[in-house]
Image 1: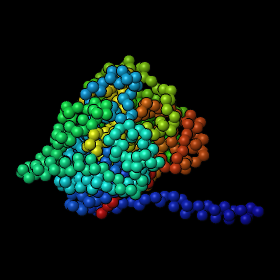
Image 2 (image 1 turned 90 degrees about the horizontal axis):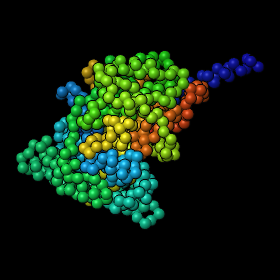
Image 3 (image 1 turned 135 degrees about the vertical axis):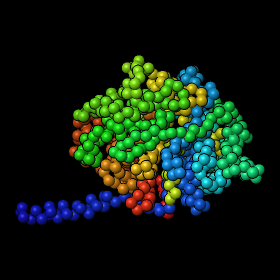
Image 4 (image 1 turned 180 degrees about the vertical axis):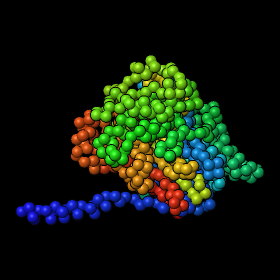
Length: 612
């Protein structure tokens, strides 16, 4: 009996090896490129980037074309949203930050929203709109770092606005949101071509036309062409088009259409708003310089986490073991608690304690707060001020900071808010230009501003009204809300090593942290890393809707084995599972050994890339 069983057991063990090998294969192939790589959230968007490279443009030109195309496709964003970017300039040999996040308009004060019995600014509609940032961000990036004309870069967007075959995802989103869309007349006329029928949205594959948007984009090109004809330089002509959007007839119609529907935007708001070209923040992790935008987004969270994780032996823990998952979850909860209390617009007082937050000594002090046996549902903000030689002016708020709150929405509604919005854009070329963008805002359902075709942002909801919740992120006219949007870039030996970004609201830096560790600590390829199983914590305050949290709740991949589940349950975790937990990460790895680029496009959504 035993003699017959031993060979069978051995045979089963041997037969299991091919399955393990297959499991290491990726759903999508790596994109190998020598000359350029273009990746974004939609196939047609990636094609727009490839078209710019075919015209002789650089990675900035391609990224701007992808930004315009995905905004036109309503790929969880639109033209009235916001743009956040990191650009590696091979001439200056440095990483540059682009801050094109809109600001709260005139009249948008905490008292204004409290008087309307609101806990936060609204989630939808004209009153949730900050000033449009994407048009300005695109034109500034193109003028300063691109090579092509605005006409070249906007051509794919104009053609799509005149009519393109809409994808099923956008069609379903419009149909599911049609009751709210009907509240705004300009949105209804664009989104619901079959108004009054059972299915009112454009159907998948149907030609979706946005003629007002096409006219607005052509007006920008007309302004550029007139300036060029008058002898202006390429750069000057693009800025003249910029002025037409923010100070000219486009601005006038945008303001009129917004105010007609109850919004607060004024001509002065658009005129005063500006794109900032700024220094990103950085930390070094085991010889790799990792760059993020500063506290007006959640980017420093990943840098704080890397500073903490640097003190651990992750390889010894084992990839996605119970100990590894517990370590990441605790680190993320502590860093996100700091985000929830200390992050805000650095161009407005009070000044964020970013030096202390990114201090390696502060990271070690935070590590001492971790309970290695159980999940800490009361994990809260630390005090970074002593680590920059100052006293914390907000200790009274900190001592009374709320660790949890009673849920307002169902878990399904909470998750929809948690992962809201955004796409990502990655571009690189042989000259050394690298671009990482996480644009967002103006997603379906968006209120369209008059006859501009521009869908307004909903980013105002990310402000708070009570300084006790976050004294740095209280809504004030002219101020930027602390957003979730967080492109990433890493240099090794002073040269591009990784460029990466992901959509998914409050999950973004959680997924990007794990993507980075997958490559650096566990030796995965870029495609394996973007598809790999991640964990997500819901123990942080959400940035949308009612800003809720779910202490102790964790998202795990279906493949997590029973013994890991059992250990986590004993540690106090409430688990939920999904077949895809990576988030739609897009990334480029720079292979210095062979002088090539490896592109990774996630299998989580409809992200797509092209390389040459």
